[in-house]
Picture 1 (cartoon, one colour):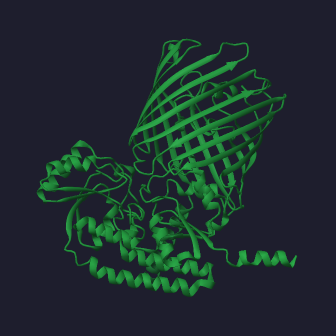
Picture 2 (spheres, chains in turn red, yellow):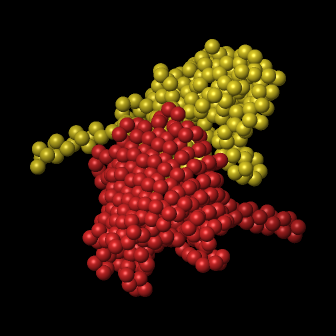
Picture 3 (cartoon, one colour):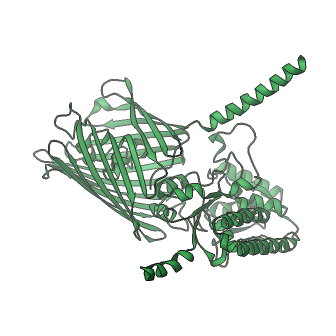
Length: 328
Length: 286
């Protein structure tokens, strides 16, 4: 009887071990990113001081042989007071086994230019560019949608990305209580000018209900030498976008220089021209120190000439767990 | 119509396999086994640190056109290869992906729990596996098998090249192993496999933890250890800055600092893995 019990125990513990390891092998990769901010503004003193800006919980896994899924939950400070809310920032699935095509569905950031795709911890400066803020609001163009991208067989990298969705966006749609439709088509070109340097050129056209049409173009040069590339790199990115018959347009241009293994400096000029309102111009400079890939401290100062606001911002950014690589 | 078919047949019959590797060391192994029967390219260049690479879309375009992807695995390319593969939209390289690290026993596999407080540790062990010539033979065998599976017509060619390579390594080992052993300092534990195979002792590492740049306190410790153990050579992998090693060498009598290639195509004349092993032996002992 004892032997039988022992055999049962051995078998069941072996099974349990097998089950546990198999179970964890299929668990999604989990990552958490948190952003803390200190801010001092001479025009908006009510925002001064420390804030816990945002936390993102990210889950990524293959669903089956056909789909890969990503879910990003955002715990974000509400506009008023110190309360926090949880939102599905992105939740989408992408196809993984179709030649030259990626299909996508869920809720996600539209391929409307370069900056709109970024999560806050990956913004080149601490804040959104003025024109992105004015066109789409703080949350960007992020709607429940379906989309597809196609990689062309050209000598250079040429990709067409189409997204069609419905949702609410208080900056974009005048009737923002209603679920509105939005369609965008982005063309992304990238050339390797030499082994160290790439040039990317993109164009986007967008069309929405209420006869809204939008346009965008971006140009990015990136240089990271094959020899010594751990210590020096340069990025110059500019993006211009607008709405309808120029009732709102603007651009930003930033220059980012990595001057040591863990340090970089970024300068950005921002411009937004809303018809009938004061033109906004902002100059900002940021110095960043990243002790590792998983933490960064960024100090920024900027001056907005339209409201004569000078701000100083210090952002602390940390990531624990798995964190998928950022897009190029 | 027949004329068109006749025109097309030669292109189909002689279409070469298109192979994309993550490192130049793997590319060299493919060239050794397959010669000019395949087209092969590497994503990471010999002067770049394979841990940290930007996933340029142009790499995805190369991966889109590949019939076979060969990577090291062991989390070496975890920061960039998944993005390149996702961007490639090529189901071929999902099913034809050879991961070399699956076929060798790794060194420095952490025991117990790992955390990022330990730096850029690799839970599956040190990924610089091809710096051991015997590991290169094991991986070459797997490449031969994979190429044979995908291109039966050239089976004998691949088999012969593998046997020649294996014999060459056996012969070369007799020469390489004659060297007496040495004590060295390095920047990162890149050369662990080479050192273990050839009785070279890595007395101290300039990085306090993998992937973490040296601190002042740690540099002082390395100086002390190097002085006490009379280390005469500091090897700095050529994608790292040599200035820290130079600072250490100033304080250690007789210490030389060398910036060395640790990958194929990392220096002039290093065009294959055998060249790389010859080059490293020469840099260490001459």
